[in-house]
Structure formats: structure tokens, C-alpha cells
Image (cartoon, rainbow, N blue to C red; front, side, top):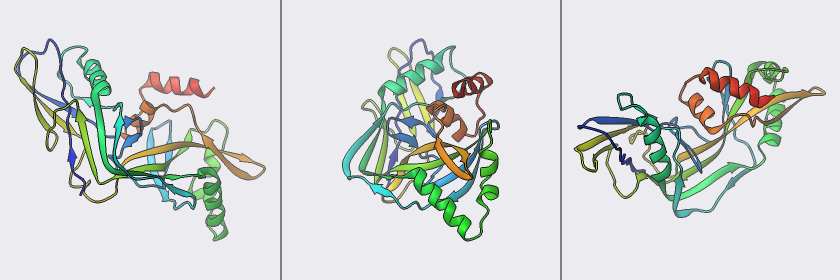
Length: 262
């Protein structure tokens, strides 16, 4: 049974009184992948419009070259980034809280193992050939003809790796909280309540649950009538977190993304 205990201790200076600080950790990214807030599974393929920031699921691919790693009794994912802090704090408080979470938070996984596609692009091409052989026009249904055009804003998002575990504990230092609620003493001031959202205990119960996932952002090309693929390296972790949360990139970041592709 997956038991999700959310813990975030926020030690803030210059903070008067007692109030609840909302912290949203959905789709946060770590050194071992993204928190699987969307409950995605290995092989899910999405159409990504980078101009609109929209995601549309196309298929769940059962690619043949799948590798399972060893099971670790205990494993840690660190550097939890991409969280959202609720409004209402003092000026500059968001940056301070996010920096504190990145330095001190972690996800502890019990009986964890990874599953990964080992030959993603070769298997993806084989899957397209298989579908076309049975009569599906993948160039149309998967928008491949549009995606392969020069300057296209269409990409593909593929869940190519997962880390599964029997238990996931999100922590900050050595203090724990149940159900995402925590009362934290602030040095020299009143206690502070923290509420963590972006996790659903009801949805995260079970054995070998995919707690963390990782994605390829894929760019399509055509060469002599064949589709070819490569990773779009212009995407950063925080770009993808915004898209997973259903947000368009801010204009400045969108312009930066375009400049990185040149």
C-alpha cells in the first residue's frame, strides 16, 4: 500500500502572525524524474503544441525494448523543484521558500525500481510501421505530417521511464506531517500552518505504483519519405513543468525557448 506523507517545513524570517501557507507540489521535478501527479504510465504518448502549451493524448505504446532495474529497499529523489507557493506572503517570499525546498526536501521511496524504454526511437518507428501496415494513416491521426514540417510548433511527449515504489514519503528535514498538513514553529514567532496539495492519497495506494516519471520531448522530421525523431533539447525542466500543469510558458520564457532552438 502506498502511503503518501507530505512534509514541508518552511523556516521564514520576518514573518509575523500565524497563517496557512499553501504549497502545490504537482508535477514537481527531482533528480530522478517528475512527481507523477497526472498518474501517467509508461508508454503514454501526447501531442504537444508548444505554441499553445496544450497536451492531447494520442496512444499508450507498448514498446518492445523495456528494461527493469534492480529493486532498492530505500531510494531517495532530491532537489524537488517546480513547486508553487500560494499568494499572500511578503515580497520575495516565494523565491525564499522555493530555494529552501530545493535545498532540504526529498522523496523517500521504499522497494523502488525503474522501468525504462531502452530503444525509444527505433521502437517508435517500428510502431508507426506496424500501424500503417494495418491501415492506419499515422501521418494524419498522429499529425506527423504537420509535425515534420520545418518550423513546426508540434512536438511529442512520451513517458519513457518510471520509478515505481510501494511507499513514497515526501519530506523536509526531519519533521513529518500526515495528509499534507503541518504546523511548524517559526523561530521567535508564532506557529505556521502549511498545507501541501498536488498529491492524492486515494489515487496513490497500491503496490509498485509509478511515483516518478520522466519524459522525452520529441521532434519529428521527414527524410526520403521516412519519419525520423530526436529529442528537442531546447526544453528545460521548468518549461515542461509549466506545460504539465496546463500553463502556457510566460512570454519571456517562450521567446527564450525559441532562441534556444536556433
